[in-house]
Image (cartoon, rainbow, N blue to C red; front, top):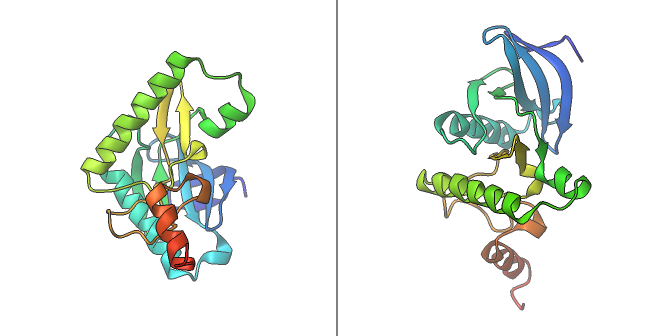
Length: 185
């Protein structure tokens, strides 16, 4: 609830999002004296070891990455429960913009595309693939595309087939997944 302390030094301002495994909060950092985003495990998933390790891995990766088009991670608090603290973004997801705003002008789309390519090239140079890149995992903030939600990011070859959102899977991920569930295809 609003006003609750999610971790020492972080007070909940608002609940932003609930996914299958995580809750995301707008929080006030007493140390930084600013708003931050705090991502933690949903109460009903606290006992799931994989959920905890994915959150901690994402937090460590975000802290290590330094690119203007990838969400900036501030810290990983081991908890319990663990909390990943990141910068606050003021924009909207690309999914929301595509659903509600007039069509992007070609120049705007090209600029966002170049920014995303830059972010993904950097991520790949660091030895990771995102594995869940989709419009809802891109925030457009002041004309700047920012890649968020690296909870599924893995080193190439370490991702099981079909990981990610089905309609946004890379063709080789989708084909390998389909082959594993139906080798006759």
